[in-house]
Length: 144
Image (tube, rainbow, N blue to C red):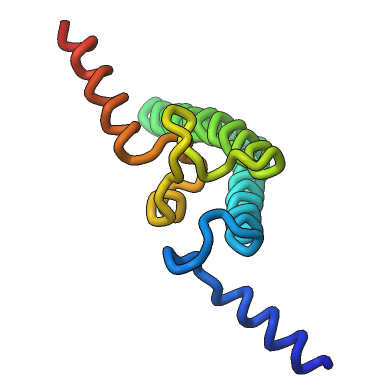
């Protein structure tokens, strides 16, 4: 029995969703849920490291150039963390869609979002075609 459990967990670890199976079956849903949770945990860990780093790097640099460089680095890190905060909100929204059964389906058309797209961007809410239409409309409005 123990060997079967080890084999099953090894299979799950190596599992990749494929087009040959039913779209958003239980195994695929679990795969993407784990992927999203791991991504979120990585971001949160990096944020904790950044906060720790920023708290420890409060030294005053006597040299003006060193101080400017330090401030620039600090601003860049804070901007990155802000982007990641927004990303966590999108990950949380994707996890909510998993729970309500709408994950993996285009918000605009209701059609399945391709597995390759979800693999590359697990927080995607639009199919590739709908995303391209959206970007074309934005470009037209921006150019006007």
